[in-house]
Length: 403
Image (cartoon, rainbow, N blue to C red; front, side, top):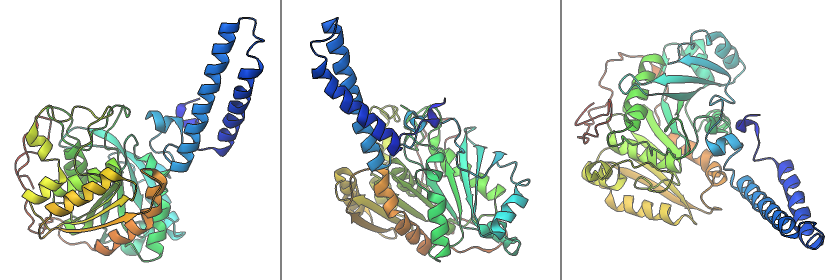
């Protein structure tokens, strides 16, 4: 059995572990003087009771927080990043054509399509898993000559694109927002921000010093692939980046670094600068210029641009609330920032999911509606200028001023 098949969010599993833990705790004093090998028996029974108690507590906290649905998601070894999708669209979406009829049938039933594929970055050469949400209108013949707005949704560490389809229930939330008229029909691209291995490989979506060009892949590569492969609007005003936790930081960082490509960003429980902890690689190798160029408040202060930001933090999230204040104090026109503090149970996925409808409503209020195709060679940046990025030394990484 693969780790991805072992559920960590099962109430039945929690009850079984809780009962075993109770029995183990009772067994310790009952058999304390009855073991043939007293030291071995006492030590083994005590350790077993402690392990079961810790496991039960961990399972309970996981269910309350909605963190990891399976052991595979906890370990970052999910066997199928496309779990929960309707079909596999192949490398670079090469199978999208053969899926047209199936997608059209779903559209006639008023259903969206969620597809899995891998995308190889033309610039970086990085290949990662990507899930793609297509609203029913995308496959509706009456919209054949339309291009759609885009939401690029960045999963939180240590997750991949499967987390948005599974634990987030993002497609259901998108469908509900679209049906209520709160969100225009939008293409949603959910890329893997870090690749494999997941654990101990938190890239924070940055172009690492002499390492992986994660930012370039998620911004330049994914955007160019989408514009040339999908019916999406290249106008920057039609592009939003969003995410929770590390994905929220990624969204704010990418939009502040590439205002020529993105107009909006929504962050729930994100932060101001790349996290430095046991799970994060040595991203900058002492390069202050690269570190500064991935600090959101510094980017917005030094390179003001016409972007709109939604930043949300929980009342119990001390660091995330501090980041809101830091970013707010750094902003000058033409940047616009919206923020709110929510009552919460801490930094967990259930807190995030409770905000998802409001986040999608905000994105919908900023997003462009689908429009008829025009010349795809228009100046999609709308005249917004790129700013000079430092040389990181990573293969294919964006440098200087590139639009």
